[in-house]
Image (spheres, rainbow, N blue to C red):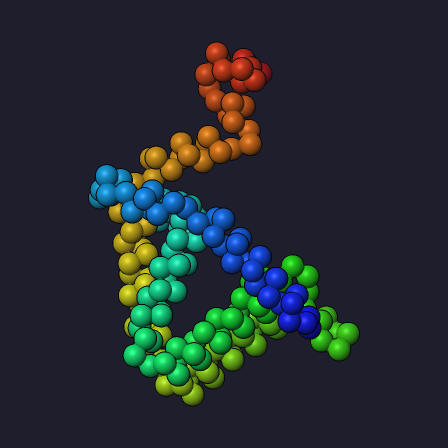
Length: 183
């Protein structure tokens, strides 16, 4: 594996990457953008777009819910933290494949190993009920927010941030847009 300074710098890069993709909280919590979707297909599209747009915000909320569900059990919280760090270090923050004693380990093997290790740690710590309840509450809150939050203002933000900018515009007066005719 790698030594401690590389591990800490890799962990720092991962945290900075997570915070860089985190959307502003006032935009996330904008109450004026909350309304009921009329058809069910609109709700499905909202959930998909909001989960993509606010993925880092949702991840932080889910982790906070897990943290608060384990706050009364400090050893279980420590076990959860160790599992979380293992996931971040061994799975999420790696750029190159993992190798042990010169053998390259497939990502699927790492994923299965982490799932098995998580199951063992949660079983030994006796926090299955907490994890399942917190997961259900987190999933419910995330899906509720994703379904109720309108995506009308998000499309404009993504369009403005697009590297193609004016090329995607239908406006003929826009520089770089050009006039296109059908063939």
